[in-house]
Length: 281
Ligand code: TA6
Image (cartoon, rainbow, N blue to C red; front, side, top):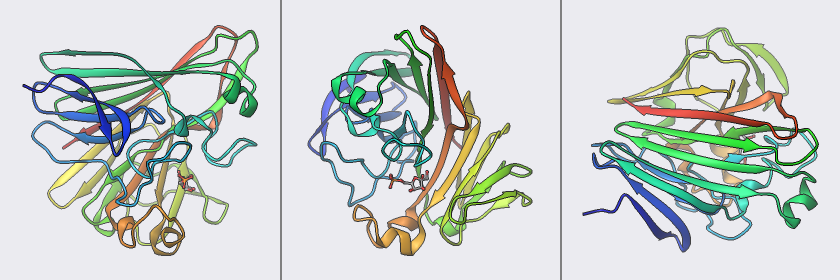
């Protein structure tokens, strides 16, 4: 019988694998508390992980669900996407029941983090697996005595059969930043298709996002993460990324929920959480 919570090595790195009795499974690296695999009950792998991903200390892993915190992208003075995706988190706790399994990873500030971001924080990443659903929740507490503010995202790399054939719904009417050009627009189409490099931040999304492909779909919804990033590097940008294979960009589609447009402001002692939920349909 498979244990519900297992401590394993994944590409030479310590990881936690959680398994629900219905066969659903997820793997979380301690490096970055990054979910690197999710197989829903009765299903197949739904997260993209580059075949050329690097599994090295201090280096981001290309694929899965990297955590961008306390800064999304290069929208501030910190390293791109912040620093928590490249440091080792602690395993905090794990639990399972008749139809779920869950694990929580934790990270607090230390001398190294305060050199980059001079603030006290305590972050937790909780992954809850049940049937065809995966909930990924980032919680942040401010244990210090000064207000902190941050932007963040759960940078989910979805596995797709063929990115050009995937239809993305749920974004119509939203204001978005086209980060490839630095221009703002409003989404007029009901379905977004990826046919070139795409890097957009949609603000204040209220509805779930649906990614439909031949024979399968994936629904994404969120709480307290109002913005949605859609990213695919396409051929030319992908060729400059050493951790992507030549055709890897065709197998991935990032749909990232985040708090990007309006930073989260946490007074001393306050807590916040944001959750992205993925449902395999
Ligand atoms: O979320 C989209 C994005 O901000 C893109 O601009 C792209 O650079 C991507 O993240 C990946 O960033 P990374 O630092 O992991 O290569």
